[in-house]
Image 1 (tube, rainbow, N blue to C red):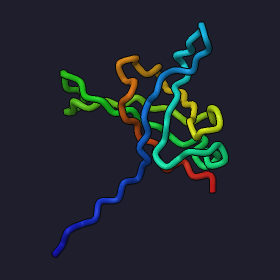
Image 2: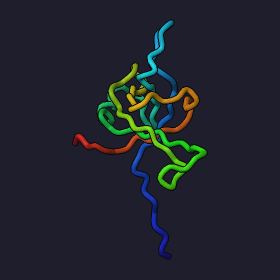
Image 3: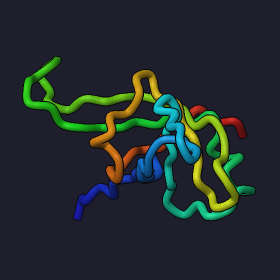
Image 4: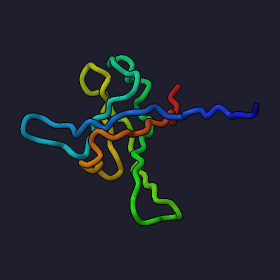
Length: 109
């Protein structure tokens, strides 16, 4: 049997929405909930890690219908393990609730 075990080199997360207060919403900062992260103390490992929002488009670019918006984890948000991230271009509102990939690089260890 020569089945290769695929290793996932990223952590799954969900784009929950934008950073906001009661009246103002800041679209330049996205809030992400990461898999297996539920305390502020554990966020430190993820600071500076690259985040990819992968989506499909109708037209092909570079022989692919998949596109990516890249970003970085910038800080913790609250005490429940939610993180803030900034992307090169702001994530579209239709992406709320969809999956993002938090890459395990660059390493700060």
